[in-house]
Length: 225
Ligand code: CA
Image: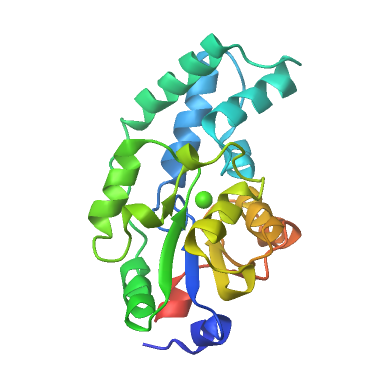
């Protein structure tokens, strides 16, 4: 294995904060499809590409944003509930998300070399958080996850990454973030953290550079193998 590129990025760092969907799990295609179809069920056009642009927002924030754009008002609690439960129902039709190839090897390398691993995700569904602990047993632990349940302001607000810094006792310059989405990158950069973007989705690399990524790569395997 060739870890030269990774070692350069990690020099003087102590921890890696991973985003979950689109970085650890190959799950964004399913989320994009489910969101798009859930909105369509209520007569609202929200194409998959827009899901990728808004990836990282909490469900509540995503639904409100779409209502402001299409209806020029906030969604009611009832509308948020209905659309979100439709989305949850539709994603069940997809097979369980599988981890991207190379993530376990990367985490194993990090752990072996003394780097601390955190996961910072907008997701707050127990089902996914439990799968994360199961699939990455020995690498990811419950006390090192910041989920949608731990913050008031989701990505692109810096609060998720600032919360991870606070709870880990680390300074921004001791950490790197691995993100795949423009709003996740904005959140991490807002917290002052070096951000490696892995473009696993359908947006152009330029969108991730414009969000403030320090480096954009196509595939985590470029670091690992
Ligand atoms: Ca993501």
